[in-house]
Image (spheres, helix red, strand yellow):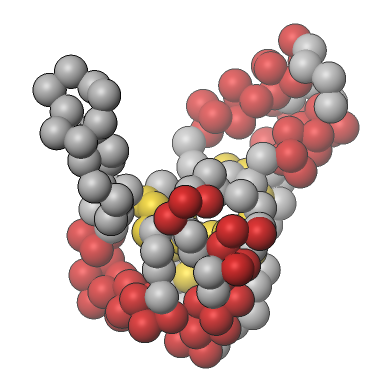
Length: 162
């Protein structure tokens, strides 16, 4: 898709809505055309065409994650949540999605819950994460779960991979 001002305006309007944005006929009038909005909504994974749960669980399914067990993580999540990828549980708490690259290929498999990344996740770790989310809610999400590599940066200690 070529970048243009219409695409930019539609994207900025969707971003201003705050996550998760769900495009509905009621808010359609605020945009350029339906096609412009659908271009944006279908391109980016953080926009949805139907309601999603409080926690959107995105499992990366691309090569690095697949080779490191993403399918087993997805199977565990399906069993734990009682839903398939693309579905939301009956309580409206969890939506499970399979997505393309989350950009953590060196720490695969990666799962992103809302804006919180969980890397090198095992099926047991995924199960524990869901239990923590049920028990503690948003407090279970503490951001990006990896050690930042600081080698070569001023004040950096060389860092480690976690």
